Length: 271
Image 1 (cartoon, rainbow, N blue to C red):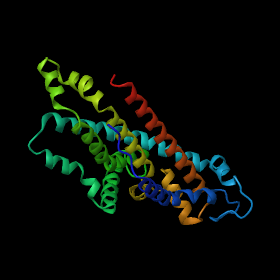
Image 2: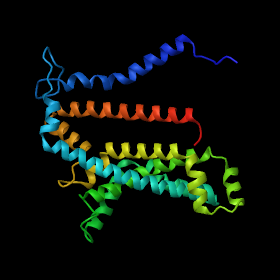
Image 3: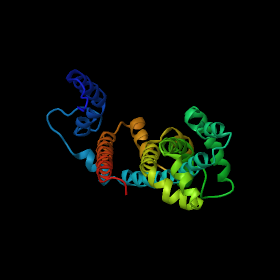
Image 4: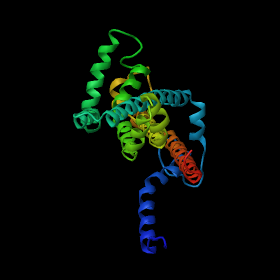
């Protein structure tokens, strides 16, 4: 049986759409090489000075490390919570599962300003009883990011669980396997790509979060998106274009490596 292949016109149309969508990203590259102190296209001479600023100016390194710390903590916590919730709904199948799912996904549909104000008052109240988790602390920002990104982990893991045949879980249960054995030896191996995707997606969402971060930080916690926003608001620093190019390259490399790894694992077959 011959495999169906798309028509040449379809491929051309798809390529044109992809180029149109990528043009705004590509246009940042020449701007990052401008020799001037403001955003502009280079005229003749190209300079690496703004890439050097990312290394020489300590605030950029500190902001990157802060974003990595917050992103790792919030994405791991959000993925674990999303995994527990999704497994509970999938295995127990409660009558109010739709209501529970709607409650968990509420941060996705709530206006960002409402979520930011709610988290601001919540973290301000926490600051009055402790110094670790509260307003303008990295742990407080990680907690706020966890609230915002956990619904996305629930969605990704629930989609992965929806593709798992329940009969394998019932067979394991009939053979006397306990809950922990069923979870770690039967279910998790079948949704490992969904969990990995949820972890990657939540990290990227935390990495780029700016709306809530502005409300719950002041001077002590400066994440990379907040530093970029400050640079655009105050003096339009061309280093913003340089860090944007670096982030684009890193995301492309990570996605490419993930795609190659998944393709290699699929070719090997089930473990």
